[in-house]
Length: 253
Image (cartoon, rainbow, N blue to C red):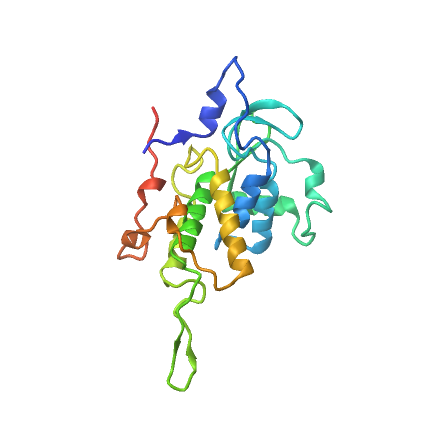
């Protein structure tokens, strides 16, 4: 499966004839929403909030876009060209006990963000979009398989037996998330998606349904287009998982 280079592709792209912007031309909100729709076991809550916060300043898609300054330009999904100074302060940053700069440093150490080297980048950052896409795919899988619906068993006296996993129907599902929530080789060299608008909309809709009705169950799993329904088949004897086909990348060259 061919996947597109992120930084290198965006740098070498030149087109003297502009074409109309496509969907995803509103900078900042889609990736931020996507971050908040996935489980990130690797992050403390304040670092996850920081990840969503700085993602508001990233390009939401690869392609033509109009940024918040009204500039028509080529976007590169996950590229954070700069973070304005006011973003580090109240009211925009609401975790004063955890300064945003410290959170960003931890996100870099955790492999969620990369500082881009070179004068041409001028301090730009790159979000690990491939890692986010993996977790979004797992979130779609959760919804498609109703993993949020726990099967409860009871003793003859009516006492409920604690399920093997308090979060998901299948106890192996949480290890699957933890395995995917790591930096994979090539994460910052390639991207698994140029636009996550549709997937983000699906997850927002599904999670709102669960919030409105905790007993809500999915009756049309086919709408979760990136769900990995055979994820269990990728479970290895050593406790890890084999990489699903839709997460594999190959060189375009």
